[in-house]
Amino acid sequence: MMCFEELKSKILAGHKSTREEALLLLNLEDAEIGELLSLANTITRRYHGNVVDTCCIVNAKCSLCGEDCSFCAQSVHNHTNVTPYPLMQTADLIDLAKRGKDMGANRFSIVTSGLSLDQKEFSSILYTIKQIKKKTSLSVCTSIGAITEKRAAMLKDAGLTRIHHNLETSKSFFASICTTHTYEQRINTVKIAKESGLEVCSGGIIGLGETLSDRIELALALKKLNVDAVPINIITPIAGTPLENVVLPSPLEILKTIAVYRLILPDKSLLLAGGREIGLRSLQSLALTSGVNGILLGNYLTTKGQMPPKDLQMIADLGLTVHHHV
Image 1: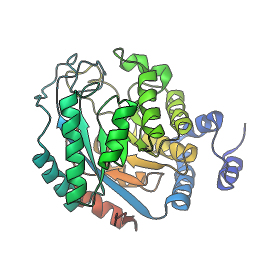
Image 2: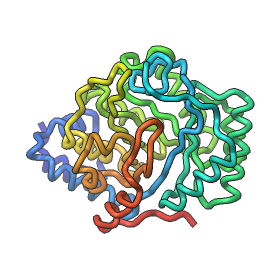
Image 3: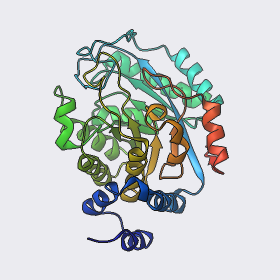
Image 4: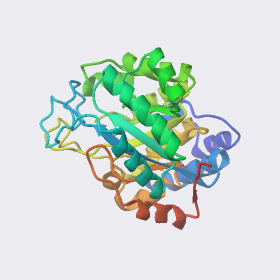
C-alpha cells in the first residue's frame, strides 16, 4: 500500500486521487489527519487563492413535497413542524436578495420544494431573476427541482448564473434515502443544466448513514459530471424525519471528508453549507483551511445558520478575503 508521503508527492505534482487512494486517506487515523488537512489547504490555495466565495439562500416555496427524502423537513411523508407557504412574491425576494448582498453574499439562490414548478410558478421565477439582476450585482442561482432543456434555456436568458441540484449521496446508497424518484433523474437535471451553458452547483449530505466508500463514489460522480461547485452539507437530524436519531459523524471525520473531496476535485469550488454548526461545532473555521473555498451565509431552508458577521470574522481571522463580484 502506498504510504501517505508518496501519495502527497504525487498529488502536489498534479495527480488527482483515485477511488482507492481517496479511501486510504479517509481511513487515516484521526491523530494523523493534520498533514492531510494541510495538503488539502495547499491544493485549495493553488487553485483558488486566499479568496472565499459567499452565497445565501431563500426558501422561496415551502410546500409539503410529495417526494420521500428521509432527511427533509418539507416531505409530506415526514411529520415535522414546518409550516407550508406558496411561492413568495417577487418584491419580497428582491428585498431578501438585497439583504443577502448587505450581509456579504455574492450569490443569491432561490430554492423551492417539490419535484418541479408549475408553469405559473416558473414564469414568476423568471421575472424575479430579471428583477434581481436589474437591481443588484448578485449572481442569481436557483434550486427548483427537475428542469427541461427549454426551461434551462429560459433561465439562462433571464440572467441566471447557476443551477443548484444536489445528488445528495452515492448512486449505491440513494434508494436508502429516497424511493419516489431515481438517481438518474437527478443526474439528468445536472446534465441538462451543464449542456445549456449554465454553471452547476451539486453536492450532497454527509452523515445520512452512508459508508466512506459512498462518499468517494459521490465525489467521483460529481467529477465525472464536471460540476462547477460542490456544496458539502452535514446532516441536521430533524424531529419527525426517519433520520431524527441518526448518529452524526465526528467533526474530524467531516474535515477528512472535505479534505479528500478537495483532492478529488482540486479545481472545483467546495462550499461549506447546511449543518456545519452542528456537525463541526468548534472546528467550523478549520474547514476553511481543509479544502473549502466557499461558505453559505445566514439561514438554511428550515434550520437556522450562524450569524453572517461571525462567519465574515471567521474568514478574516484566517487571513482569507471574501470574493467580491464587480
